[in-house]
Structure formats: C-alpha cells, structure tokens
Image (cartoon, rainbow, N blue to C red; front, side):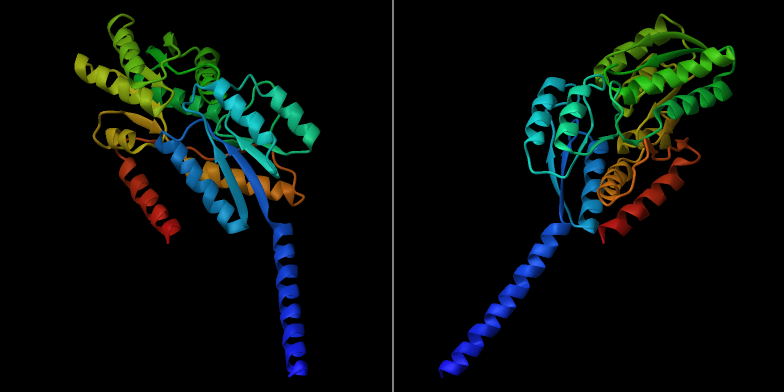
Length: 319
C-alpha cells in the first residue's frame, strides 16, 4: 500500500511540476500592454478597441485599457498616463488628447525602458512611433476632391476641432498646403475648436451665409453632420461638403446624398496594427516611425460597395 501511495504521490508531483513549468513558460511569453485612449464614447474609438483586442487575443497579450471622460480632457488623461507608468506593463500605447504635451511621458518611459506608441493621434513634441491615418494625406485627398468638383475659383471654408491634436491639425495643414502651393482654390475662412455637432452647425451656417463659401472641408464626422444640417436648413445644396471618419450616421448621409464625400479611416485596422507593431517591437523588430493605415474617398456612387465589404469583414472577424 505504501508503495502504491508513494508512486501516486510521485506521479502527482511530476504532473504538478510539469504544469508549473508550462505555466512559467507561458508567463514568460505573455505581455501586458497599457492602453490609454482619448475616449470610448464614439464609434471610431470602439472600433479601435475592438481591433486592439483582436490582435491581443491572437498574440496572447493582455490589455489594460483606460481613458478620460472626453477627447478634450488632457489633464485627466495625464493623470491616467502617470498612473499607467506605475503598472507592470511591457508597452504603453496611447492617443494623446494634447499632442504638444508628450515629452514628459517619453522621458519617463525611456527611464523605465518602456516602449511607447502613439495611436490615431501623433505626438508633436517628441519622436514616437505612430500608427494611424496619414492625416496630411487626408488633407490632400479633400483638396483634390474639392478642386475637381468646385473648381479653381471656389471659395472654401474649413471647420475643425481642437488644434491640440495632431490628427485634426495635420488634416488642416495638408489641405492648406496644397491650396497655397497650387494657388487654385482660396481658403476663405476657418473655424476652429468646433468640437461638437452644435459648434459645427453654427460655424457652417456662418460660413455659408456670411462668407459665401462654395465648399466646406470638415475634419471629422461629427463636424460633417453639423454642416449637413446647416446646409439643409439654409437650402444650399450647391455648397459641397466633405468630411472624415467612418461612422454609420456619416456613411448613411453619403448614401442618401446629404453629404457629398467622406474620407474613411478604419479604427479597427488602426487598433489591430498598433498592438501588432508593439508586439513585433518587443520581439526584436524595429517599428517604423509612422505606420499609415490606408484611407478611401467615398461618394454616393461608391459607398454601398464599401459598406458591403465592411459588413462582410466584420462578420468574418466575429466568427
């Protein structure tokens, strides 16, 4: 009996020892990524989160996600980022609410040997890897569309949000650069800090009525929808509107002909690639300074095909 008990105990020890060894080996290959976004109150940010979680699940990465109360809550985000530095994480991925206030974070992360990556929105005061849209390229796409549809004598207005975020300011600078370089379209006016639907609506009303613009470049989907309402209420469908984002309401506005054009950006692909790049970096690969996710210009003629492709893709990843 003692011999049987001893053999059973020995076998159990071996099995437990083996399990412990396997567990330790699994722990060695498991990374934890800290993620600090700007918010989660919009479809774009929820898609970024979904893309990150998908890439993390494929690679055995744990995500610790936090975010402030709004995209403009820069000081609140700063507190979250400081707290995140104290966490046992292997990399930190963040979308700055203030692109001009990242140098402190880069310095502290470097002292900790912690890799940093900016997602969707880049840093202006430090050199950090960026994953997101080519926002200056978006400005160029908007310029080329309006030049083709409005013509070289068109007076264009710009409506944008906070200048503290590179994602928006780069779209404006890209658009203005080509207007100035080619001298074919005049930027007649620009309204900044229009961070919500109401602000964009008021700015669009003013630009259409007072500035007599023939087109408006809206740097986000929310801004675009405010401009759509202004144009409809004023009965000025001759004023061309182009916006940026891939929200359902904005896509539907393009399909219905209420918005003339939309430049897409895939939040899912941005989030997925950000985690993939951080993971590759921890495994010895050098991340590119900027990893641009492609953008597409949509009109009423092309939006249905895009939506079909998007829905098929979402169904495939949900399986």
